[in-house]
Length: 341
Image (cartoon, rainbow, N blue to C red; front, top):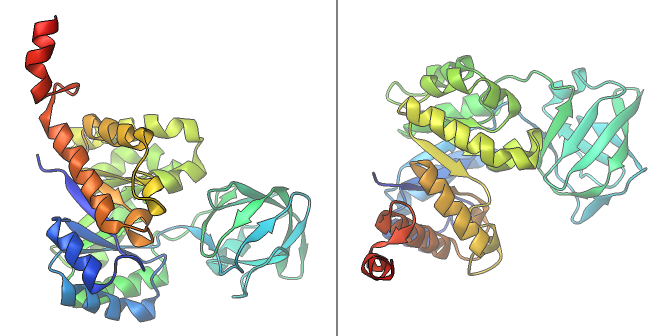
């Protein structure tokens, strides 16, 4: 079985030189993340990639998620401070920030808890002033632009945003056949994207929320493939449970004969450096041994310092996996091991 490599495009990779390097390395699929690509730029982005590469393109929807808006650089929210939450598009700072979609405000009330980004910032709504909830910072930290947020109690959001619907039409006009559904929570969500995509579309359901895990047995058979996004999942379930959810989802996907891919933090060190850690190498090996069909590079190729080098590391990891003997010893070690014992 050929293990596929999926690469997320971004400022570091969406240029002729790097696209060519990724093509040379046999990348199987380019991912355009609609959470970080404007609808206005999408047509040109697809055209640019097509101009410099023959690699298929996957549109990855925003899906049912809450995000903060643009933030000033290096904004830190300190415990005990108050923050005004607004649906207006403002440049966020330590006292005011945007949440979208606007419908989230219909569900926010006194006592609601909002978690933002992976730094674990937590806000608790303490009062409503006019149309704006005011929250106290329960747990402080840094907040960056356009980062995902969670709301407790959980709120129901549409499976696809208006932007997703429009983007799918643009993708279809370009002849794209690969589409990923973010925050899939039911088989009905998958069916909704399939109804909008071209008839021959390949729909990847992303399991990255508690609801997605709970409903995996209906989501997996409804999709053509599964993608486990460990990053967003870690905002919704305790970090220590992620490895076990990953293994459970992979087992279920294999049982249903659906390809399954794993994303987030595979080579996080290579976002800023040239080599991974031993722990990252071990994580990749364990993920391959679990039975995945593909690995997804996200920040490593979207904003990392060496997108092509990150792919090279994955290729090396796959080479070792293919040569492993029962998942433990490489071929060249067999004679020596037999001699020893």
